[in-house]
Image (tube, rainbow, N blue to C red; front, top):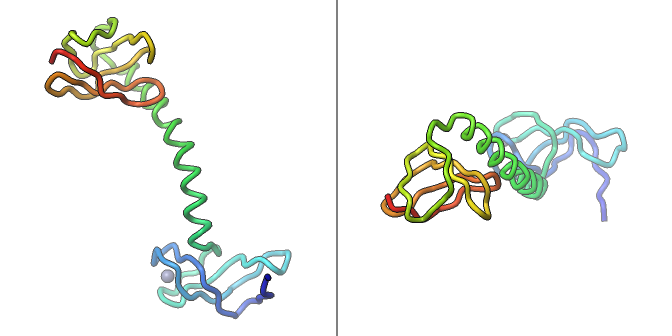
Length: 135
Ligand SMILES: [Zn+2]
């Protein structure tokens, strides 16, 4: 059941400043008269858009997932553009240095981002993978 609310009343909302759900005062209602548009935090006094902590988690989670895939691709492109190493086929017995470009049968082109003992981090178009090497 939806409660009718109006400006000046109390509402529990997520405060962007306090970073927690706390008591707010409704400052403005949306045009439909049922949705809270703007609230003022009773704790810190900041006025902001009405949002609940549930809105916050679902909203950012899906956004984060989307942008993570995009970020990997953008990063991959810029790393490829900056890579100074030689381009060669990936071989787990090869020795790699940061900035080398490797061609993998399955994952395609990748850039060596970090090297460890017998392993290296290679950034492929979709994500970074830990690959075996002879370092
Ligand atoms: Zn607050």
